[in-house]
Amino acid sequence: MTKKKRRNRGLVLASIMLAMFLAAIEATIVSTAMPSIVADLGGFSLYSWVFSAYLLTNAATVLLFGRLSDIFGRKPIFMMGISLFLVGAVTSALSPSMEVLIVARLIQGFGAGALMPIATTIVGDIYTKEERAKIQGYLSSVWGISAVTGPALGGFFVDVLSWPYVFWMNVPLGLLALLGVIFFFHEDVSEEKRPIDVAGSFWVVITISTLMFILVEGGVGIPWKSWAMFALSIASIVSFIIFCLVERKAREPMMPFHIWKYQSIRYANLTSLTTGMILMGVTSYLPAFVQGVM
Image 1 (cartoon, helix red, strand yellow):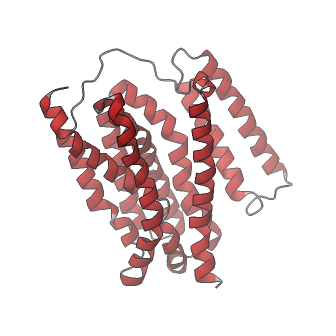
Image 2 (cartoon, helix red, strand yellow; image 1 turned 180 degrees about the horizontal axis):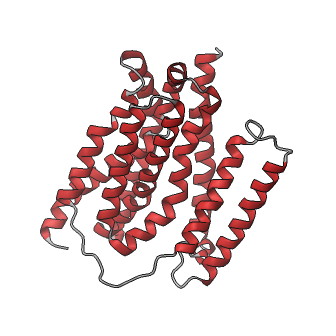
């Protein structure tokens, strides 16, 4: 590594952490603003979709963007992720209805799907194995800080300003992170041509999308005991099975299943899944209960 690259590592890390902070806090900062948003835009029946739309595209595209970064390089995909995130933030702030807000949150989720996996990958590229444990702690702290500050900032913007500022906040910070990556992150992109797992990408998006739709609309928009719910459940299961079959046959799969043999990877992801469910469940609905019921 050249002296220039080593000197710029701190600035690159700061830019990455800032981008990760925006993507992480966006999942929690909206919670305290939701009662005001619903009062202004209406559509309380769509309440959960404001959160779920963001998480849906985020979760569905993480594997895809991670794979694209291996092929086209970290920097262009990371920049695209920040750009999509900012487009979604501006559209959210200007939303005239709940439906438009949900579409804007879908766009934001696409951007966040590119930010999360590539941030840790960039760290792996610019830091040695001995340094990564310490730097990974910095990245992990972003989630803790966003979980604490998100609801507080959301309440502050709603009380002092208005709910669109929950989204306007992202613009200057996102541009700062984008400029940091543009000017300080320099990478050597491999010339080797690597295939894109198109089939795997398609089926993982279908699987996660149908599962999220079941979890959000089940018992609310669609009765649990209905043919529509049965069809969605079958579609989710079948698409997951096809995804597994496709990945086992792919020359370079986007999800190599052999990594789940390692206990550290298996249990770390199960722990992240559990804590994520608790965090999102509490931060999404507790503010509405406190403000609307108590």
